[in-house]
Image 1 (cartoon, rainbow, N blue to C red):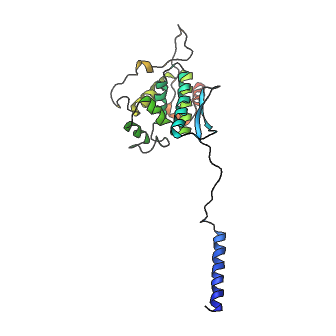
Image 2: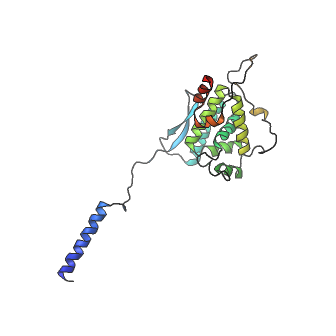
Image 3: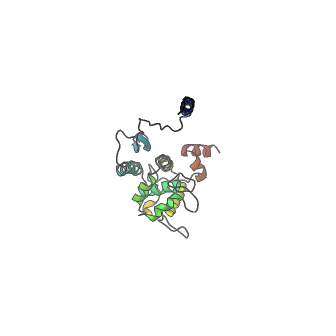
Length: 219
């Protein structure tokens, strides 16, 4: 190899090195800080649920079990049957516009996968836990509706949840089972309860229960 060729080769190599240094697109960046796993816990002060970081990682089945127990603890603290509030939560979450694993196309939404499994109420709550942020928001909405005495809205959500989880037929008459009927909080004997002005489920899905109730009262 001539001296001119050697010099030309070094120049090419130097230019390639400069290009690689200016555009490090082929480099892999490894982040050392691991993300903390999340789990659902109960806020005892407000009787709602929240997402909390785990101090130590749990196996996935244990994370699901702890999260389910936190939700059931909140539901069990009300006068209504926990299964009623579970179906009401499904009524909020099982729609095509929801995030995965529940939403998707109208022809084949994610929640249709639940119908292919053992679709008991306990299995339903475990299925709901798979999208934690959306679940926390929906459970707290249902708890707020229960405390606010919004019987009609909860009845409608209950029927939606039972239909979409395969508990009752889509079409034809259906009756709410006796153990799933609404129970008012702090109910007293001899009291007569009047149904308030109807809440809009469409507005409820886009805002908090408190905001919708407040706006309804100002109308």
